[in-house]
Amino acid sequence: MALSASTVKTTPFEGQKPGTSGLRKKVKVFVEPNYTENFIQCILDANGSAINGSLLVVGGDGRYYCKKATEIIVRMCAANGVSRLLVGQNGILSTPAVSSLIRHNKALGGIVLTASHNPGGPENDFGIKFNCENGGPAPDAFTNKIYDLSTAIKEYKIVAGLQIDISKPGTSTFDINGKPFVVDVIDSVSNYVNHMKEIFDFAKLRDYVSGKSTGKPLKMRIDSMNGVTGSYVREIFLTNLGASEDCVVHTTPLEDFGGLHPDPNLTYAKDLVETVSKGDYDIGAAFDGDGDRNMIIGNKAFFVTPSDSLAVIAHYLECIPYFQKNGVQGFARSMPTASAVDLVGAKLGKEVFEVPTGWKYFGNLMDAGRLCLCGEESFGTGSNHIREKDGIWAVLAWLSVMQHTGKGIEEILKNHWSIYGRNYFTRYDYEECDLDPCNQMMAAMEKNITNPAFAGKSYSSGGKTYKVKVADNFSYTDPVDKSVSTKQGLRIVFEDGSRIVMRLSGTGSSGATVRLYIDSYEKDNVLGKASEMLKPLIDIALEISELPKFTGRNAPTVIT
Ligand code: G16
Image (cartoon, rainbow, N blue to C red; front, side, top):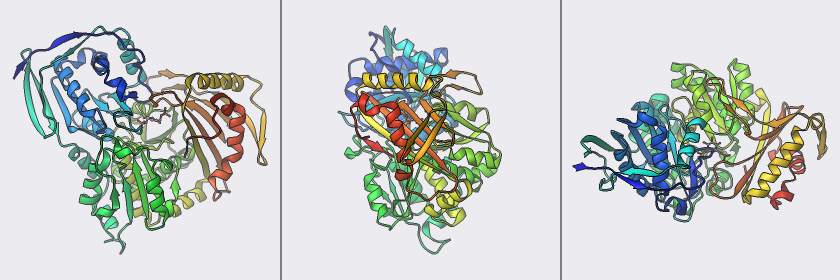
């Protein structure tokens, strides 16, 4: 069908600045006339001439506005010289699946439609991000370019008459101003499932899950929270690993996640935690809306902190065929993540990197062959098989560790702590605070802790005393391209290695979310109750930051 592109006049919108992982706003902002179109045009333009004749992947977590945005993107790609698009059926692709597809197809990149763990529906959140040819979220230099373009945009290009049915797999070819433009609507699941089969020993896992190798089926409870992972979970855990239907819940991706807040933590995955706490399950797992985050709990809802999850997987990495084949390079974590993996790295003689919050900071190290496993306290775990964190991969890694050791999750953790000691860790979130007082709080705290007189000070609470070793606003120089990222979070490091970290979230869609992270290491006292062990340091953090005074909040909205 022959069609032609047209140019539409527009004017800039304020605030089209991508955050930790893309642009996230309320749906009502994205549906304003030209808002989505402007941002997409800036993404395409930020690629420069490489966009001509390119292949892009498009898909999202199925939340409200995904389908409409996908149609807009198809029409705009057609008008901007893209020659082929791989589009997930019904616009659905998990974030890890997009990353995998970009890499497998050597695409120029992908446009991912998700606000991740933020709630969905007409009154809630939407998001758009660009992933580059390595499959990872665009780095700061690229997102800054998108933002700069968004402040000066005057027009966008679109083939308004292009109609495409994304509900069925198939290939459509269009003639746009005399050039072919191909849209492949693809099955959302198969490429990703095949990728997982290359990484893990599915035959062994099937025998383990079904009970063939142990004499009793593994009792799993996997909660997709009505996010995008539902179809992937069914294909992997039910069809391929032979788990029974009652092992999976909330596996239908819904535009509003059925009212759930698809953030896999102890607060929002309450249903899973309550069910598993009754003692009938060996493992419980949940994912976020777009499938890159995971939470792992053991029998009786024994909670595995994401920092510990990373360290345990690092310790046993070589039980996974992918790492037997490709070797184990370095490990990495984001700065606020507890440093449990550092101890594993030191024991195994591996490089360990500490990067700012944001999965995009792991990409260069992976591309340079220096990093194979990384994670974040924000329930992200993943490896260099793609350039995004990967929730389902993390569960398959845990099943591999369980199968390999023949132990349950609690026993695996206790054994780990007996070898390495334990990093007690918690994160307090204060969501939807007013932005101005939060900025004032961060400025006041930065001034206080970077004053040379601060180092050496002692703070006491609950019978414990902590002496400040160093304090700063974290700054990171990428070891590969030497790019510098400043102001990545306030941190106070005490002489015993314990840390207080405070930063403002870069993924919210309105107001400010304050994140307070507490990391306290114990070599021998490893079986304490985390909330009690961390209480003194939490009180000290609240005292130093004066958080209640600035925010008016006496309690966090989420504790993990
Ligand atoms: C994104 C990033 C993560 C980051 C998380 C939280 O995850 O990819 O690297 O840790 O946000 O960021 P913040 O603390 O700034 O809210 P996701 O799952 O939201 O894409």
